[in-house]
Length: 475
Image (cartoon, rainbow, N blue to C red; front, side, top):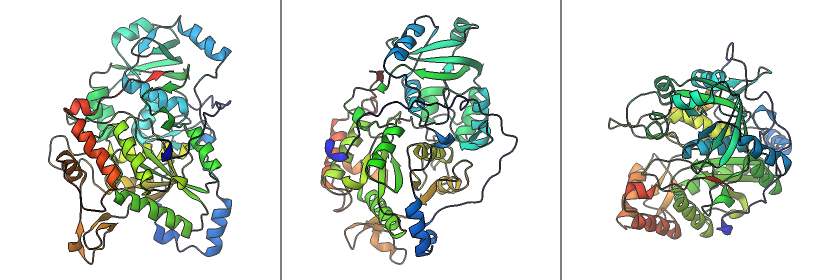
């Protein structure tokens, strides 16, 4: 897969932390900005002088809080001391999703958060979708990043101030210190995150319903970098490594595109057109961050290793330019929480160095679990991103609608003056064609990418087997 993108060597750990980052004060009030969608039509009206000035002054956007959090102990005495310390602490065994959140926290995707949330952070996240830091500044935080424990674990911890987090084989992964234990109000958490408590929400059933009735927060120290040993670790670039790669490529703008599906030519059209328009705005070298989600996904999503194979073919076939594209895996679990979750997706890319974020129809959405309709309004995600507190520095780029142009026999931007010439191929239709080994219209997806998708459905026998996830292990 080396042809997909150029990858950097593992960078050294950041020597600095934000000691008070995980203890922001409760906000007294929030000042919301007016909607600020950056449409290309509006941005393109800037004067040529303004465009040149913007390009000349552009550098990688600062991470939230001004500094990337790095919670992985450096090799040497500090790491060995953590291992010794872990031997005397009460243990909490992590689920697969818990371990994915340790991964997210450890590399600074949630900067300036320094560990699993304490109650003040949890409440701010649920009620305000942001955190107010000690200096009064606000950073976006729309999803609770929490660790649940049960009554027996709470009793075992007692009045201890530290616990060790262990994997499925009881190997120490991290130490959580200066801990706080508080009530896990599951109904409130679900209602405020998803806007419904209807049964059938995938993440809720996987990670919340059977979880413990208490949450434990504290400062996190991870013993060593999380690895999955699945042949894809070279794509799991941390925010620090991505920033290093963007600087190496001399990027003066980074535009991020998250997906959890195979890339078709409509996606590619959008991404290449975005770069063209950024060049027209005066940027010299915009770089695309193609950033598939790599954590938990629901059973009918295409598994990560098949998606990565498909993305490889997209670059090999020249649909996207490897010189201006960085392909990496985003380690977060997927919630399918619509406008609430898309804020997390955007915020985390700020920490990776992106100053533009492409958002489409119904981002992070899903069908209603009980009714025959979408759970969220298809336009609310992009509207919310334009108003979300703490995301003012990020330029939001709404999708232009792409469909299959039957006259041109390729994916093209929809022309409302001739709607009869366009064919909309939904994700469901795409999956049905692949399952039945039927070819899509010429120009819908590159042949190599389509073959990967067909091969995946040929290999899949049950929904459970199609979504088997390898357990992450520190290595």
